Image 1 (cartoon, helix red, strand yellow):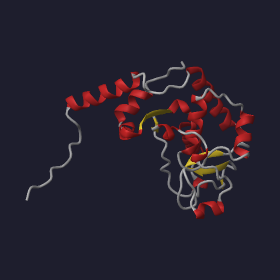
Image 2 (cartoon, helix red, strand yellow):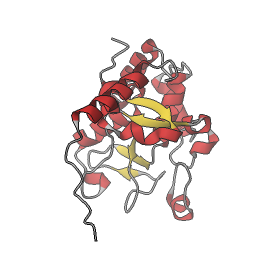
Image 3 (cartoon, helix red, strand yellow):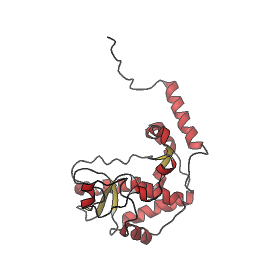
Image 4 (tube, one colour):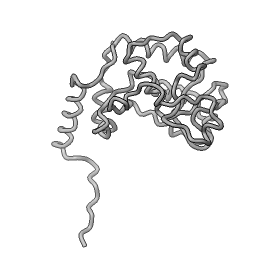
Length: 211
């Protein structure tokens, strides 16, 4: 019986070159949806102000034990956290793509009115403990148009232990990368796996259109 060879630790140079060229082509393609530079800059500043306003809750992309989506988690720093899936990122991207530049007061009003989605769908168990129940299907989102939303800098929160005790600096860094449209890009759902390749995230990460 033939033995399966080990996968290569590195791809041959010619394949690496092709992947880099493919990523560069997507960066330059007129098909790639773009947010206006001034709007991107505005949202970066808005997210910084959001972080500085202690009365506003922070969305955290994390679910599972002790992190039921849509529920309230009281962090040891006294900051309120809301566990979610990727849905708040869809909300901020679509808002920015549409040219919206909300004030911090308007963001607070949307949160209080439960207009920011926290999940694609909530289970019955989650519904029983959720303070916020807005789902992604209630708003327009990139998936509806055949796009996959990706992050340039990874946003997975890999910290161990309860969410309430994750270092607050880690929470802040996660929130900024998670919510800021400048850390996002779209790719067709039919080839969505490409959006996870370092060649793509590296190429998109080199864009600073609003500077």
